[in-house]
Length: 404
Ligand code: AMP
Ligand code: MG
Image 1 (cartoon, rainbow, N blue to C red):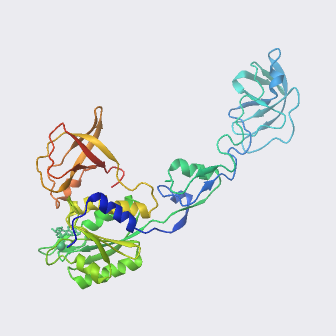
Image 2: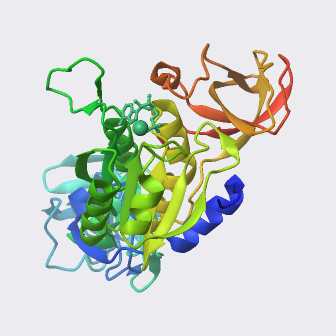
């Protein structure tokens, strides 16, 4: 049997084995959270013309610098969305509204509060220097400047900038298709009654939700019996239809643990089997061509945790993200964790940001099969072999918030 692999080594290998997805074009409205696959440069100045930032009168500033009030002749109005055909000469003013283009000849805007309009004339009570109160063409975005590079995650601000450039579609990395099979003779799908000895397939639902959160999409491969030939066939189907194949269950070394043999039967090269951490030690990683195949433990909490540590980085890489791993922070343990073993352990934890920094508390159970222990879990505390924790001790935690 292959020797146990360390987490960091496993992650590196997985990133190296995960292929890539081809870019696709999506409507701007569907681009939130996607990763840009092209360089976006400004094709326009924004704003595209000098404009008024307020309601008032466009004037020649020099006309307001003498004895006040200055009295100027009102020659028209420029509502937003229109422009003024004429030129503002000496002694003239035009009424202008926020966002309207500054007319030819004018070089300043006097705000409405400093004026009084009557009978085709405007009295100006404050001087305005030439250049005052004008939003310059291109002051937000300049024609030709590079706005975003590939790898940029699109958030509302990036989306707004692209809209201000008139773009309606954008090239993003594809959402990786993750084929997901659930193995175990005891499994039933939700919505159907259970017979004695059966349990519902929860792993499919937790993992599909996590894959969605990482920017992937799940291709259901359904329930698979603990039979090498059945699972091998499903893995083949998965490889043909997806970017990455994941199975849960049957990854340890018992008689009915068929995943390793099924991978080999499907022509998958095994890269490692068993990882040097709990929960989730039984994990098999293989590849065929540029496609990764991951066999995770069937225990519901173990499946989630090993997926967060191993599958998440692969999906994020395929989805085009530049950061692959959950963030690491130092936290102060609020509880004690006394159970020590020779294997590194990721303790389910609830971390909170307090005045003194991050604190970590632990749910009652850390059993790999207790799914309830994942409720409220927003971090994994990294406990090295033979380590224990006292309350008040500093520990390392991976933050899972915004991650699962
Ligand atoms: P295994 O990894 O196949 O040895 O399964 C370990 C434990 O996880 C057993 O108690 C299984 O019944 C349970 N299990 C396996 N697959 C699933 C699943 N898809 N949903 C819920 N529990 C599962
Ligand atoms: Mg099983």
